[in-house]
Length: 259
Image (cartoon, rainbow, N blue to C red):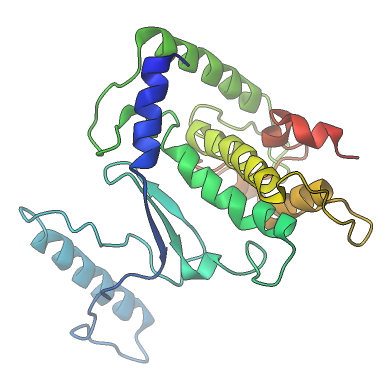
């Protein structure tokens, strides 16, 4: 990456805004009629209230304190138009984060999630927006061409892989590109952050595992899943579980050194 593009990328990174836990103001659902015996109706009425609330926002200034996920959602997101990363309270628990857990475990868990969302700011879609959320090309022509060449290799790699639960099918590398870039960036960022936290010290061996081993074991354990074939081949966003060596680790040199 050339200096001009790198300067813009660092400006965008510095402008990132983070939201953690829960919003300062809660959505008011007090007007929604809830019937204990009408589950479907309750969902429809709640959805209708959401639609009305969104329509009421049309033409008004953007509320930058608004959340697009509830605190009870085990997930996180990056919003390119607001250049913000958001981590609901529900993801700040095991297996991603435990207050009294070993640092290596937390860096491999929630650290990789944080890095993943940061990575979305610079993936195939997020990279089209600048630090203020404007759709603007801040890349030099050479750097953008190099980016496209590198990401095309990632697309080709995933195109050749099959989901664990549906071995007769293939992953769509193009449609999952953003998430795959996020996974790769998240793992790399989290590992570098873990090394920085050590400040040159050698972590203790715990339960027969080195700090590096605990980091990568935590990352892998965070994404374990049992999934039906029908779900594995559903129109993709995130890649499905894969039987091959996890591609994100293939592009990270450190796992190759960890026995």
